Image (cartoon, rainbow, N blue to C red; front, top):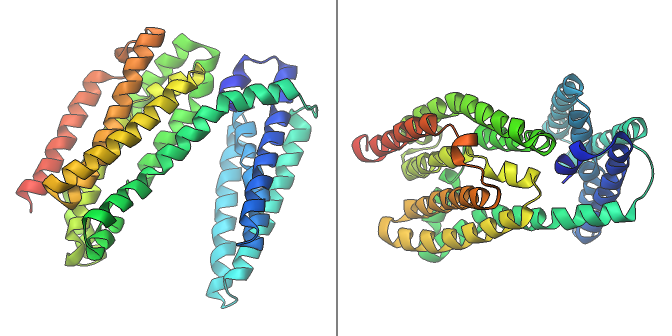
Length: 355
């Protein structure tokens, strides 16, 4: 909720909010580490430092330190990969890799403390903490429910199909990671803009989503057409069905680039996001089971796409009913329709004509 609350605060309140957010994250990280400690001591230590350090990116972003954020992100990512892979490559085992990652997490935590000293005010505000948790709780539950979709699909496949089918499903039931990361990043980054100025923020969502459509959809169309051969070349002909599943989940590009949840989050209408997540989960379970019986393994992927589209439609309707914000104000409908049609036709071609 930091992105929602921060733009509306005075300069002193912003500093206080950063510190109190740090306190909340620290408490949650310690609780998670205590739960993990009996299973992995090193993992628990890493969890404490690394989870708290996630606040670093938000502080840099909210204080418009974009170049610093870029350099920090690239540097940390490269160092983490190097220190994770190098010990294993040299034959020292995974324990040394985990220890190296702990040192990186410790460095990130120390850098966070430096940023807090520079941009925050060390004053614990009980009321601010209570209000932040109250606003964030529906989102936390919503993220948990959304994250469980992969496990729900896996359970459905296990109950309806063979172990070999489950292996095929696990390989193919993946969204293109670049789309997921960039769409989520765009959604999060636009929350402060809407929270600060609703009208201008909504206009920015329209322009940015249209811009991303021109990048995402052409790539999705090419990947959809080539999905069959990608999996055959990368693995073997036995995973041809995985390519079909991957192509089906590329249809999620359509709802991914619609952002009613961004506006609702910025306006602190979090209960509706939770309601939509629960509804999506129920639709996913029912649709996946029914479509699996009708279409086989790919029916589970169809159920996931249907559930995600349903969630975005529901949020769009809620946003209009609650705030009178029309879909065309933040969705470039003509661009979305044309690209969606082309993607659906590409999927039809890849599954019906090219097979």
